[in-house]
Image 1 (cartoon, rainbow, N blue to C red):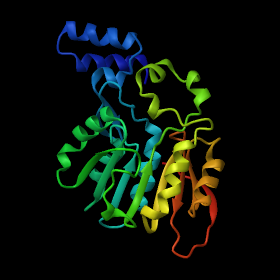
Image 2 (image 1 turned 90 degrees about the vertical axis):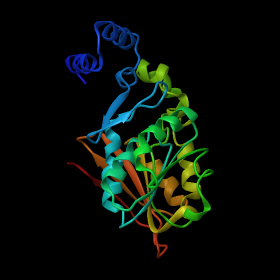
Image 3 (image 1 turned 120 degrees about the horizontal axis):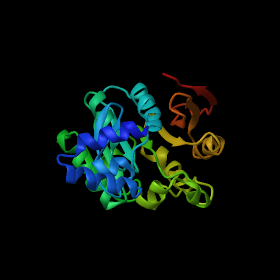
Image 4 (image 1 turned 90 degrees about the horizontal axis):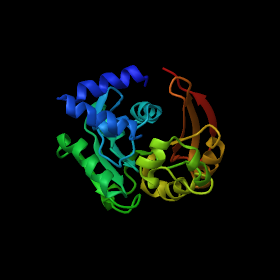
Length: 256
């Protein structure tokens, strides 16, 4: 976002000159604009963002687009490491009859996600816990779409990230371990237990990490596909629980 655009957002968010000065002071201090004004736009939807909550990136819309295209009618959808639950909110607005669960280990994120999904009473549940742990046993073998924008930044690369991310977003939402893929190994290890036959696991990653991410998912019995978008500067890996047991891997580009 350009400085002029940020200025317009700040002006629109302040009711008084004193409020505007306070917001500008926070932004100058390096706090992410979305945390300053309390919201972010994701897929055309305004998502509430609390202080200390990971700010959804536009590149994650790649996961959303493929999730929508892969979801069957009345799908069971789970978003792990949901943060503000931006993807879940967008999916709920798009898919009919969805049974949706959003999970995060960070209590601050869970509180924010609960606020964003509150209008979807009876259609969505926000659960606090480590990956699959808080999910109800009723969804074992029934999940049609399993999404994760888990932390995938290698630990040593955290120091190279922009200051506003390093200082104001939770480390647990950024640090993916020595090679950035530690959490994805844990997700992939249990995926086939939770996925429905022909169900899909979609994970955001980087172009550099895509091949290793594919290897992790295939090691745990998933057929894989790499998808990218130049428009969004995004890369994701899609894993499918194959009914036949046959594994095939292919790469593709998804651009809108």
